[in-house]
Image (cartoon, rainbow, N blue to C red; front, side):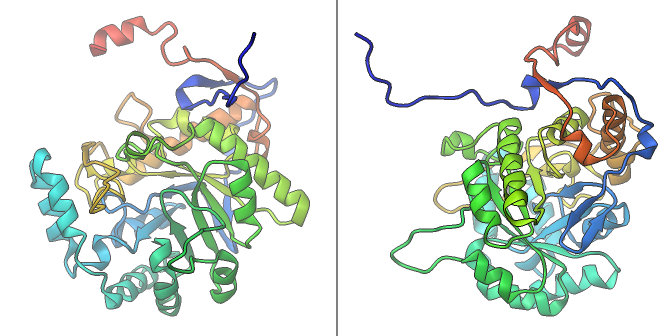
Amino acid sequence: MTAPQFKQLRRAYGFEEVAIVPGDVTVNPEQTNIELKIGKFTFAIPVLAAAMDGVTDVTFAIEMNRLGGLAVLNLDGLQVRYDNPKEILAEIVRTAPDKVLPLLQKIYTQPIKENLVAERVREIKAAGAVCAVSLIPANTKKLAPIIEEAGADILFVQSTVTSARHVSKSYRGLVFSELCKSVKMPVVVGNCVSYSACLELMRTGISGILVGVGPGAACTSREVLGVGVPQITATIDCAAARDAYLKESGRYVPIITDGGFKKGGDVCKAFVAGTDGVMIGSVFAQAKEAPGMGYHWGMSSPHPALPRGTRIKVGTTGTLEQILFGPTSVTDGSQNLVGALRTAMGICGAATIEEMHKVEMVIAPAIVTEGKSWQFAQSGK
């Protein structure tokens, strides 16, 4: 007699398990339109730099905006806890691996200084750049008025997992519908990975969704908590929610796949899966302009009780402009990400991101290894 099944599992897919199918028609890559719109803002490239202390500081945010993208400044991090964060960053970089976690936990106990929150926003705005900042839900009510008064343009509210409803007996959680009404700037919320959570978040009036739980190179949430969905499946599910919400409301809310990118091919696959933009951390941590000086660590690394991240050495491979537009100096696909996206769109016959969403994708676990034995032999893999 067949035993009743307690739970049905479905297969989920990450970047390395799928491949993009070329189109029947090709398009000149230079003629593709890859703009990303968030609220009233339009960005020439659909690429965001993660709100992580090893990736984005004021200088990096200004340069990223000059190149057509958007970098998000972490207002729960070192930039607003220390008057001279470069000294602290240097200390993190030179600390031995076995001692870096206690150091991070100690460094991040320094309280956030409200004057620095406003000052960092004003520094970015003074350079004529679009200023995007990230807050954790617990600090949003207190700091949102400060950043708005200082001139911030886009507010990201981020935590490991974000939902539209939070149950607590001890306090009243952040209500996104109220937040959207209280601030004039677009509000982007993350992170989520499911159709239902994404749809419910969009109904609160937010202007964007970050997709991804635990895929980042420096994040260990999947190991520590066991939560997460591989990025291709998570993106497909949230794209379906975006389209359903568009039919329901007439309002298009972009989704941004956040984390897990190692190379241009991953970026291209995310757009075929349905994303409108990508948020990248570790690859940008390799830029000469990155404040982490070749090191990268997760936003939850310094958690006092349950760290969910680690410091990793990513090295410095080139300038931010090289990583985005080339010319590439490496062969692993981690540079000229925008060129890769435009080329893939051209091969697939997609002139716009919307058309890229309609491109066929296949399950292909061997896409990275098929016929590559010589490469693996020479690389020692």
